[in-house]
Image (cartoon, one colour):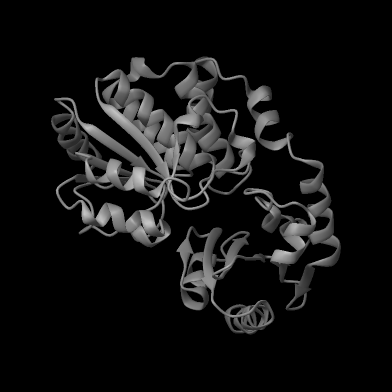
Length: 336
């Protein structure tokens, strides 16, 4: 992590008097973004600061049970209010992302407030040094929640109660695929154990996140696997796709396709998987891989994106048919 101790000292100095602090998560906020933001917000409020949490668009319905999530402002539905909040902020904390282009219109509001201190807490690649005043960036961390845990245990360990522990656990659990990805280390399990000791009910949290889907979502998964999955390149790669008509057919809600991209990787021999989801403006590209195959490199080269070695994303502004053809050609070139 970039000069952690020095940045902690700077942060503590900045927080020595009450501040108006905005915590921002990325577009399509996931468990790590939401859990990390809310954990930080609870700590900062307990220290006498005023906080607001903002995300560009709505979080998935399977995270609605999280304590405090109703306080999260959604920029898409309250842009005027959010613009005002950001403009008046003394500190803006960017959580679980490092590029403003991941925020759509919200990014412009942050850039306009050039007097606010900008803090980054993130685990993605290529954090821009010149954008932030304080950086807590660790690309080896499995989740931003792990970095937040380190910050809290360094500055205010006694603040981690059951609620904060639960939020951090959600972040770590979801960004590690329920502790199954290659980014899981012994330290991850140690932190998870500490959080359980703080009162996290593992079975309850697991059920709330992974076993409360709608019937439509389960039927959509079956449809995508049966009708919209293709295995290519001699069984080494695969892709799935969803257009807007198909989403309407299954009453699609934000978060319904979460995790779909991982299913082709359960097929023996498949090293790389993609999910193409149509939106009004572009096609969202989700990429996953196994082992040493670096999809962050693939995302950057072919879809203008990035992320992690085994989990990345990007965008395509071509129609679905052309996007898939571009992917197939890219796979042939990339895998050889």
